[in-house]
Length: 145
Image (cartoon, rainbow, N blue to C red; front, side, top):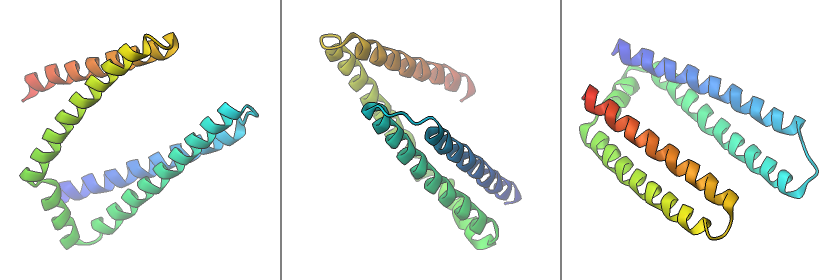
């Protein structure tokens, strides 16, 4: 249980580091403001996503802090995170989700090729990257497992 407690505390530290990076990102966005309407929309979107990230990471940090101070809650979290059924559902849903995303990216790439070359090459790059990550992980897990 002591090993799991260290894992929870490490999670708390990473969440707080993430909060710091997100706050820096928000500050950077305010420092480099532009007057262009599209750029202003993008800056607002980035600020909103960063603020949501800060809230989510703070929630993780607070939960980790509270759990690490209570042995019963720590044991309950350990059981929850190591539940085989939950892990199996997560693994299967992740696999199906990646398939759907890959097929959608390829379809969007094909459609975008008829409309705009910039969007086409952006989607092509995203598709290639997703395929590369998937193949790399397959090779890695075939060797490890």
